[in-house]
Structure formats: C-alpha cells, structure tokens
Length: 424
Length: 101
Image (tube, rainbow over all chains, first blue to last red):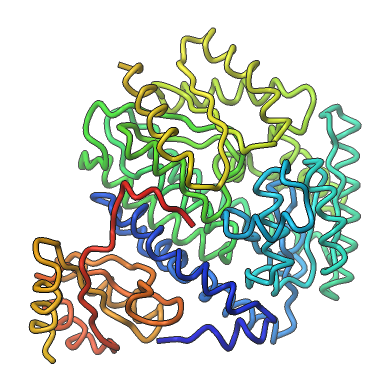
C-alpha cells in the first residue's frame, strides 16, 4: 500500500488533522457512489481518482514540479486555463466542498460567509489540502464579495494573482476582460518563465476545447427522455474531478465514458426505472466532495439529468474561437467565450434565466431544483426572478438553501420527496 | 488463515449481515488493472477508498462480494497483478446514513 504520509509531511500538511478527513472519506464515498446500481464501467477512472483524491494527483504534481513546471490553483470557471497550459503550467482546482474545512475558515472569517469561501480558506490555512500546499500561485477573480475579502487573508500565506471580473456584459466589459486576460498572461509568463506565443496558446485552446467537447458529449447522453445512462451523482463526480485532472487525460476518460453511455442509449440501459422524474439542478457550485444534494435527490425518487452551475454546464458550454492567429485576437476570443458564463455576479443576468429555460427544454426535465449555498447573496437574490420565469413556462421549481453540514439532510429529503411526489 | 475462514469468522461475528471483501492493492494502478481484468472476466468489482477499519492511511482497494472474492484473486494471479491482502467486513455501505465528508 502506498503511504502518502511522507508526501503530505513534505508538503507541510497538518497530518493529524488531515487524518480526520481521510477517515470520513471512505464511508461517505461508499454510501453515495457504491450503493448505486448499474453504474457505467467508465466510472472506474473517476472512482479511482476520488478514492485517493489527496494522493494520486498530488503525487503527479510533485513529480511535475521537480521538472520545473509551475502549478496554478483556481477557484472559478472564469479563469482561462488556456493561458496557463500554453506556458507549460498546470492548473488545479482547489478543495472547498467539505464541512471539515469550515471551522478553520471561521477562525479568519465571520460565520455568515458562504461555506465554500470559508472551507477554501480553511483548507489553505489549516494545511489540510495537498493541492493548496502544491500551488506556486493561486488565481482569484472578483466574482464574489466573500472571495474578494478572503483573498486578502489568503494572500498573507501564498502568492496570489487576482483577475478583476466585470460585473456587466457590455462590449466595453468584454474589452476589459480581454485586457485582464492579457495581464494574467504576463503574470503567468513571469511565474513559469515560458514565453506565451500565438502558437502555444492555439495549442492550449485546442486542448481545452477538446475537454469541453468530451464533457459535453457525456452530458448529451443525459438528454434522452427514455433512458438515463448515468446518474447525476456520477456525472457530478466526473465534473468535480475534471477541475483537478490533467486536461488531456480527462478528455480521454470522458470520451471513453461517453462511448459507453451512447452504447447504453442504443441498448436501452438506464440506471433509473422508467418514469423516474427528471430534474435540472441549478444554482451555486458543488465543489468536491460536496455530494449531499445529489445523493439526497437521487435517493428520493428523482434523477438529476443536468447541472446548470460551475460544476456543470458552465464549465464546458461554448468553445473558444480557434481561428485567431495573434495573441490579441486570441485574448479577445477567450474573453468572449468566458463572458458567456452566466454567473449571478453579473447585472443584469437575464441570460442565466434564458439558459436555464433552454436547458430545461433540451434535457426534457419534469422540474428544476434551484439550490443556494447559505449566504450566497447574488444567487439568492436572483432566485425569485428565475423561479417566476420557470413557473411562467410551466416548469415546477423547488428552492433549496443549504450548506455542507449533515444536520438538514432529513429535512431536505422530506422536501425533495414531497416535490417529486407533486411532479406526479 | 485462509480467506474462506476469515469470511466465516466475520459472518459469525455479524450474524445476518451481508459480508463484503476489500482487496487491498499496492497502488492505484494495480487496483485499476485488477478492476479491468475482473470486469473482463465477468466479475463485479468496484474501486473504493480503503475503509479505515483495514489500514491506517488513504488508499485505493477493490470492493468485491464474498461470493466472488476467490475468483477475483484467481484473475489477479493469472494477470500477474499483485494483491496485498483481503479484508472481509460487514457491509459498510448505507445509502440512507446521510453522513457526508
């Protein structure tokens, strides 16, 4: 058995505290994933990475750093991975989906901050996440007031580069975002020591577009109204791991999974009984290992067939224009693609409502569950407009606010079961 | 002690409970290879984090039903995949436990 403790010790982690997290993972993973029936064979890869999530990929990153490569940690789907990859850097997601890290975060932040922000800071400051220890730089963005202030604290402990995300989507805002990407490119070149060229950026755009196509291909199979070839819980795991994994391997594994799911559609192999109610989940992101809501919904008589959030469609929808041949043109193309993500940080944000309506139709859902992490003001505030639009379109909607704790699970289960029953 | 005897011991200690076997592996690559080989042989196996009841650090193992564990070990031998041990445990999985990380 590979013992990861020496690596974690070398990374300066708090081994005793981290051990408590390791103790919780096997039971939670088993309860959520291994109790499912007829899971696709292709989930084996994603299971393996998740089963040793603080071991397998961190060990790879340690080896890559020995070769001189630099690791950039990111929180958000607005940060253009392409720029880092073009300069031979590595992008990794950062842990922030567990209640385990929240108390440590609350040593620095008041408790009425969203759990994702508190957990992220707690994971770094408590030294209980190897990804946070491995990063040469963390890339933040101004998509959330809680994160903005959290970055100021985190910056006392680790190098940070902050991208200023516009709050509107006028043409001049897209121009501004292109200039922010150019500034980020300058920063990445300084950290990596690798010059960014139109050629290496074009290659990186191809790599990330390929990942988007592969993940979208998996999602495409979930649109079938008669056969649900993969659970939402498994699709979520794939998406969560996609933030951490090598992008080319991720593409390969997502395509392999998609092949199997397409075969299941042909063979009529569904992981849920016929007539199971189809749910679109929208709202705040679900960082690994936040599996609570998916598990509750899918063990309460419904199936999630689409996630409209940062750990769902926002991550892969819309490709970057790959026809540009100058850095200026490529920055503009990147800006245009990333500004199509409809985060609640923008005003107005009617495009998100339209996107949810479009996805609800495409995935032929019976209902929508709009979920909000506690204290996420922007998503919470636009919830009534979203819900009205869905009701006007005749799509039932359930609004849920929750956090990472277990203690509302029973109440959530009751509410979801009642909603599913109401769907008929 | 032979695996059959250890399974029987666990079954006696937990009467009426289903017994699962955790096949401990030297590393995740071996776990992945054995998973592929077992599935190709028509056996049911799942990659899982190794329960803390079996060892002291994070790791990957294969979850196999008690009735298939000998067949999976045969596949490992035939495929020249190293296995570090087998630990039978009363079923650790509960979809309604609602305990998350």
